[in-house]
Image (cartoon, rainbow, N blue to C red; front, side, top):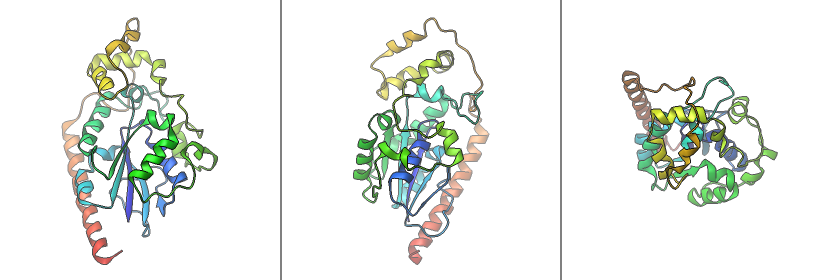
Length: 262
């Protein structure tokens, strides 16, 4: 089985990419909305698409050792990520810079790997068909059924996916600069994490720090957020150990599958 798994910081466009993949490429199966890499699909698909954004933090062992695992990593302007609201929790901001930075650091070692493909959300919504072409060049097993730019005409997203995307619509650039409508939230996050300015520059979203001038007359407001500002060390260690065990079981299943030819 070839597994193409989508990862990235939450609110980086992973759900949109999943819908594009499942709508515009041939496959033998895919998860309904989200599914950990360490969960097994039903049946014996030859090509399976799945998505679990936070898996980027835990896939290293499985990715290095499984030659049939391919990973698609979504990255988005951190200003957009930390000011994004999920329809399932409309009163809270969904993510913070700590979560964005953790995912970015976890992904960096894979950037030059041939089974790892990095996509900027901003590039995807600006030139979807070009991203599709590049994806097919990188992963030769993909067979196109329709263009990314026309996916909305035939897509059938699940209810959870529709909620995450805010509805079904054509790929467009309307949300690239959406962070500008959430300046009090952005200023509060910038005061907590001044390194946001450098991350924005390093990832090519700005040339310098001048963009912060837009915040000069803005009052910072500390809004509720799904992710805590500080990491809970014991919880993090427990999760890492649990995911490591899951990755060992995953590899054992892959080895058994290779030996039996199934």
